[in-house]
Length: 131
Image (cartoon, rainbow, N blue to C red):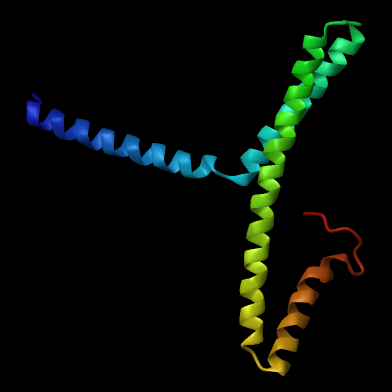
């Protein structure tokens, strides 16, 4: 037979695991890909609403305003995602420039050559890469 203390210990373990899962979910939800998906979904929903109103020849301004509102919300979400992405790219670029400036000119040239080769190699003699 299970004692009350054992049940309380199990309950605390389950609650700790639940909190760990929730924290991991929140970390993953903050992903820019999800933001982009939400923005594109809003734009698609707005465009779909406008197209349905046009096909059904509705004259209600409200129907068109709902569609336009969805499109605008999607644009705002995508704009925020773009700004965050641009900031991260700029930050990474500054870090790379700092690290390259610390190298001597020959080493810097070698690193830049290797990076360029890695980026261009899939397109040379093969066309578009098939990832």
